[in-house]
Length: 116
Length: 114
Image 1: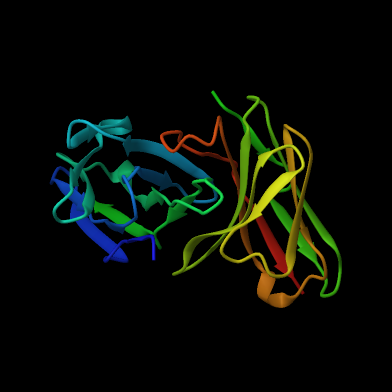
Image 2: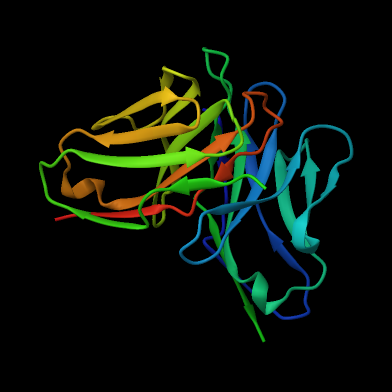
């Protein structure tokens, strides 16, 4: 089945330390991968995407993500975490349907807590 | 910036009622989506629409229907609300159906069915 998995429900990191939020994917065809962030009582905000090209993708708010085809992973990273980065993070992948449409399918989310 | 507006932030309805959730986008996007978000389950796709009057079932369409009479508006309908439909509902849109297009989300409607 086409899907993404976020193996950690919760990630805790000290402010100023690097952070990683993990994501693995399973998809037929080329993977189109996305990261979103959700702050309390808000919708999801787009952070970055991987379509093709460089394996390291840079996005909003200093976040980046590393695409690894052999490990089917797309981990979100930031060199130095801020308390304001505390939020719920979702990985998503475009899935291919017989109709030709490609809606996004999301992981279950990882809650990031950055501690001062 | 893309603006996706959901008509209600909070909604309380009773079991058996017919419930309408409305979503409007202002950027002439072709595709629109409805998800529900539940703790520990992430976002699950209910229905999406790739053109006016065109729709496709998502992963959990049972108990729901949708309507897209105009390009900017996508409605989710709970035909006969049940308590297990208490959830956060998120609407999203994307410019086209091309797989490189991100989806833009509204702020959600927290629906409680009593």
